[in-house]
Length: 272
Picture 1 (cartoon, helix red, strand yellow):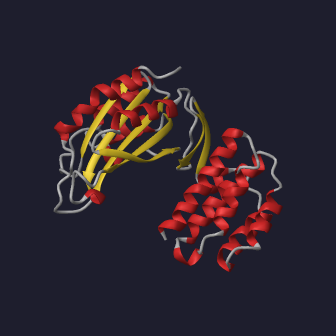
Picture 2 (tube, one colour):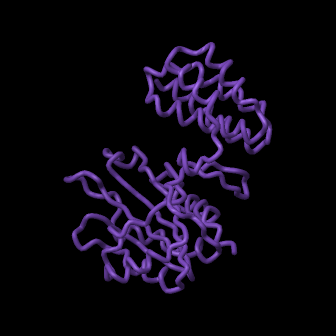
């Protein structure tokens, strides 16, 4: 199974490289990689998602996607062949609405970010700031597992403020990026139950960011630790918890303070 997921990772990377290099010949290797998979040994939806990315990238660079997928399907086992035949006939033109990804330009080139499907129209380059926050968090006990655009900022993490005021502030949010961290197994016997999330948001109301930052803090019920910082129309909300009863959170209110200065710097040095 691990070998098949290596092929899927290769296929997804071929899709991204195709978009970055604007070279349609690159995507065919990704399609061929999918054709080598035994769909009974993986979650079949992962093969569908990878194929959709390849179809999108191929179509964006002028490849005859139908021919490429048909040829690959002829050499695949029946389960994967069915998936490949689907994309030989189905165009993929919109990743955001149909497939939960967003194509974004960054200083390092095009990226394909997972997308939560919520409105995302910030005036600030939130993705640029998000990668600064990624660099801030990585290198310690956490590594980043996912960066999602079009995310929500759940009010459950904002129990330190008046619910009506918090909800009003959230309505002025123009876009949110969620940065998910995974704990290294070398620092905890139960890394899989530990959760770290940073919500990076922009608001159209200048006071809303401060309202949201102030509402995030130590949860009175002890369910999570939280840290909120704001700069202008931008806000970062960092929360950490254990998702299993009986296992303490790796982070607490005091330990999260080590991120405060870096978060403030990330927001303050944001591009216009």
